[in-house]
Length: 159
Picture 1 (cartoon, rainbow, N blue to C red):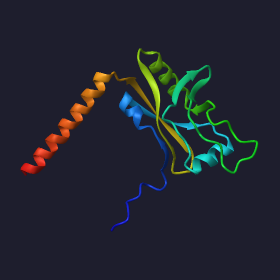
Picture 2 (picture 1 turned 60 degrees about the vertical axis):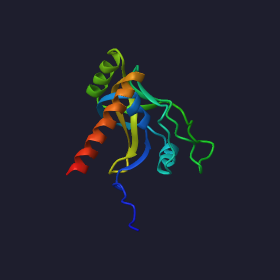
Picture 3 (picture 1 turned 90 degrees about the vertical axis):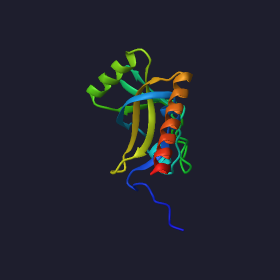
Picture 4 (picture 1 turned 30 degrees about the horizontal axis):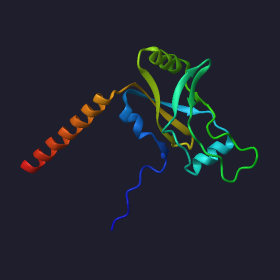
């Protein structure tokens, strides 16, 4: 049996928020850096993080990641970090202004999509700008996706 094909080893995904793609109609994706402490980076390197319940929100001096859970580092001491503390996102002023403007529009939210280490080993966060979907919107998306799969099957079986 062949070995499982591995993803790009330079881009290690730590946490993926698949629920955000289902709950929001994502229009744009932005990559942001994070302000982290040493024990947070070590915990991320161990692969421990959850962004399922997290969200990004504009505060007085920038965009902050709120409610993201990075558990305490296992080999840390009493200087360990607080797991659910708010973390500042590193963005350019123009990007911050654009995100604040998008949030002020009716129904737009900033949802964290993916937490990963980039090629240089720096922790990055993908933020999606999107509108929340209602229950009927979610059903329509599933219906459209199923129909396109069925079309592909029909075309494949015919040819």
